[in-house]
Image (cartoon, rainbow, N blue to C red; front, side, top):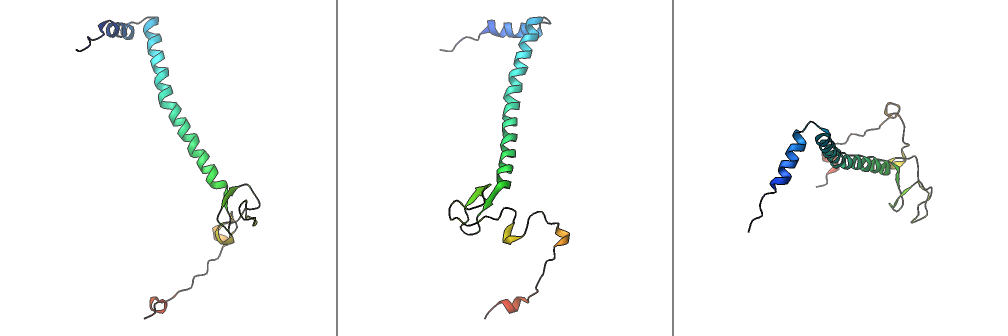
Length: 116
């Protein structure tokens, strides 16, 4: 058995939308507010999550001895070795201008590296 359509509520909603009075304006404003909350709140939460993730990744320091990551500590909590706070991979200091650094490149023949 199917339910009859709620014609009373449909007509009431149509009158409120079409009516130029206070009731129609209040109804539209409430719908706009709910729609704004449904759309904006997840976007703001997602943006905050992305910013938090970037901050966390930037402040993580990996121990060169055991590989444990930690935030803002001078000593590794797992093995006790000192952490290099301002060092990048292989002990290169962070914040150094790339034009001031010299890279040594050694050319090798492909056949020299192979053993037959």
